[in-house]
Image (cartoon, rainbow, N blue to C red; front, side, top):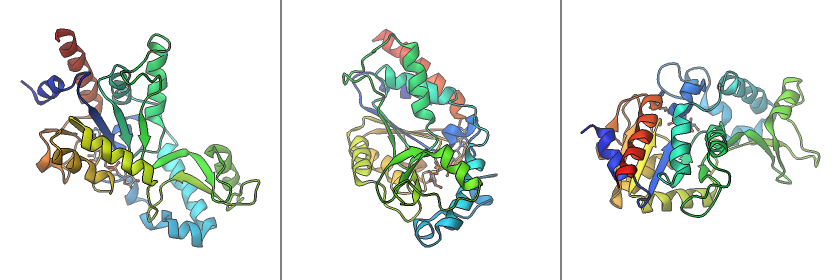
Length: 271
Ligand code: APR
């Protein structure tokens, strides 16, 4: 039996299955990864995008952030088959939550696409019609005013930055900040606690397309393993958590995830 086949046997509507995704999940959609060959951090410095720099040099931060936004999202083809497979498993009750480090909004887009295909108002086992997607690092499609907290679409604000209106300000006069967690900035406490309790409660924890080197996300597989979950890692390269994983799948997410979805459905038909 292959690793994915044995993994699919543990995924059913009665088990708690949590997925953690990283940049490798969106790479097939044209969003560059951060590390590894050709990664974003070969062309930019993390130090350009720290919270400290945002506070001390908001103009310079926004000029560099415009370049990074173009690099990350300038050529994105939309959700890929891995996003759709995960969204389908979540809609059909085989995955309980998708925690993502990605800020591209592609899991939400995939959830909308697959729910439109399902019968309208399809209910999940927890009775909700909404997908459970935790954006641990926020969403780069939005900006937020640091004074009044107003959130708005990022695109028009980046247009203003491209026209040298930096730093861009809210109508209240406050400076806008990308609605993402910057280096040196704490993740929202509620998001961390929710992700940690999901990891603790999980029977199966899937770490997909992440190098698992950035905290606190990198600790989630360890936390899941410590409470007895079956941990599966799907990435093209090794991660520091490979040693604690029950399944390590060195496959492209666009092969592994659709296959896992098919296997899970086959198994459920048998049970
Ligand atoms: N299929 C499977 N795995 C892939 C694919 C693919 N098609 N493409 C890339 N990968 C793997 C790479 O081998 C690597 O292990 O995905 C991983 C991507 O790792 P990173 O680029 O480090 O991305 P991530 O783990 O999400 O980074 C975490 O770091 O810079 C911060 O805030 C940023 O959220 C990001 C965080």
